Amino acid sequence: MKKFLLALLVLLFIGGVYLKEGKQPQPLPANTQSAEMLKPGPYQVRKQKLTLTDQGRSVTANGDYEGAKQRSFKVLVWTPKTRPDTPQPLLIYSHGFMSSGRGGSYLGEHLASHGYTVAAPTFPLTHLVAPGGPNIGDVINQPGDVSFIVDTLLAGNADPQSDFYQRIDSARIAAAGLSLGGMTSELVAYHPQTGDSRIAAAISIAGPADMFSERFFAHRAIPFMMVATPQDAMVAYDANAANILDKVPGAVLVTIDNASHAGFASTAKWLRWMDNPDSLGCDYLMKNIEDVDEDDWLDSIGTAEMGVVPADVSATCTMNPMPKTMNPIRQHQLNTLAVSSFLWCHFEPDSSVAQESCDFLNTRFAQEIPEVRVDF
Image 1 (cartoon, rainbow, N blue to C red):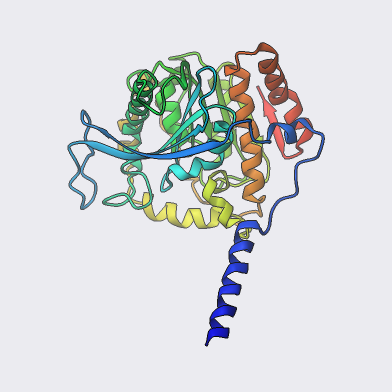
Image 2: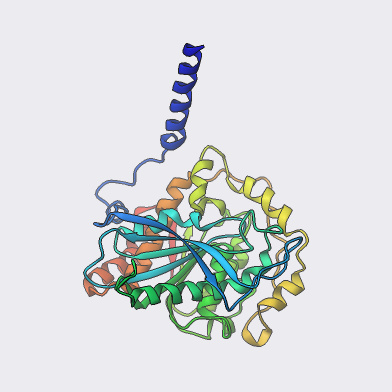
């Protein structure tokens, strides 16, 4: 019996190591700027778990859930363990539908190692185990959640007793997100009513944008980047990303070929043995959006005068067969390069470093990585 238990423990240990370390992508080419930029920064990273409560806003009833008078949610925050000499940028990362704040872990860890504060909420009603079931329509309330996080962290930034004291430069705040989180970032950056003027740059990672016209993005002029893949089975590339440069003057479109929608999330690293993580993602997605009324969905976002227009959602999860896509860990690496170079391009105070980052994003990135195309 003891030998059996010992053998079982050994097998579990080997299996755990294989799950963590197995099926890794090939390293990026040595002596390239891509490989250099992907290295961690000089700071060790601390991860904190916060619970925030916005007493001025409520959670609406959802299925068999009666709702709540206050809007509470958990937030993961990555910061350098050592306070940087000068205040650094803040990034709010918004997760996708049925995901959580953990979906942005690899971005949070990388950027915090370079001095950033990165906050990733798990929104009240759009995560997988939300009370009453995940409700995609609650995205209209998520820009307010992002603003409340900014309020809270900036209050800590001014409080000598806070862990966040003098860590954040209030003039360098960005919003980024995946899928529905990308849409959240678009809303908080550009919406004329629910937008937040403190957002100085925005990134949508495979986010829906077909319901937003040029008029919507004209409400503000800030740096904007879309990262997307033509093999996206959930948010169609042609309808949402391919024409983004026609809508947003000065925008950047980073196209990663042979990637997947679900592969942008940190948790997809555990799906790297699958041919395409979107096959699993689509199963969950279609079960949770089949009762959504498209007209109510658009009406809740805004009006045509605001730049919100009819959108075609029929292409969701209709790709058949799904192509084989890249290892999600490689996809994380390429997305990290896109996000970090974009932020450094616009937020880095050292003009030479900023220019080097802009040049990498605009030119070197696609030259060094064959799966990448950058249009601007």
